[in-house]
Image 1 (cartoon, rainbow, N blue to C red):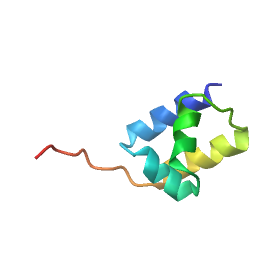
Image 2 (image 1 turned 45 degrees about the vertical axis):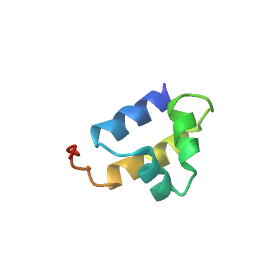
Image 3 (image 1 turned 135 degrees about the horizontal axis):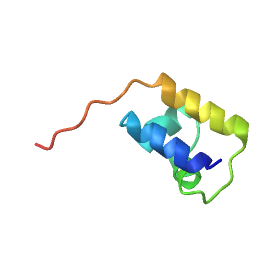
Length: 66
């Protein structure tokens, strides 16, 4: 399974920023970036934890340029 891609798709569906997911999960935002870009391998438990964080966060409203 492609964990990084799945996390990225789930996060983008809810219009969440990597920083918001990282803060809620208690990890460095660079780690979320590295996971999504598959620069580092992630264990099943970590993947499940990040998916739970994404599910728990409310969807962000689409931002409109001023």
